[in-house]
Image: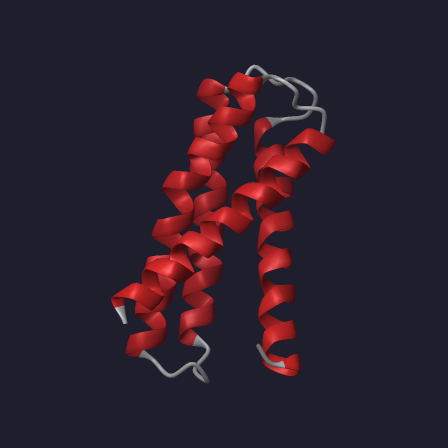
Length: 124
C-alpha cells in the first residue's frame, strides 16, 4: 500500500510539474528563477492536497461526495497558498499572481481529471 501511494504521489507531482511549468512557459514566464519558484510551490502543495484526498477516500466511500468536496476545498486552499507564495517570490508581471495561480492550477487539475476519467472509462 505504501509503495503504491508513494508511486501515485510521485506520478501526480511529476505530471503537475510538467503541466504547470508548460502552462507557465506559455504564459511567457521565461525566468529560470520564476520557473523554479513555480516548481517549488507545487512540490509543497501537491503532496499535501493528494495525501489529504487519499485519506478522505480511505475514510469515506469513493461514492460519497465528501472526498470530492474536500478535494475542492484543498484545491482552493492550494490556489491561495501558491498565490501568496508567488506574490512574495515571482518577478513575473504580465498578469496578477492570483490569476496566474488560478490558471496554472486549473490546467493541472483539469488534466488530472481527464486522465482519471480516461482510466476509469477505458481501463489502465
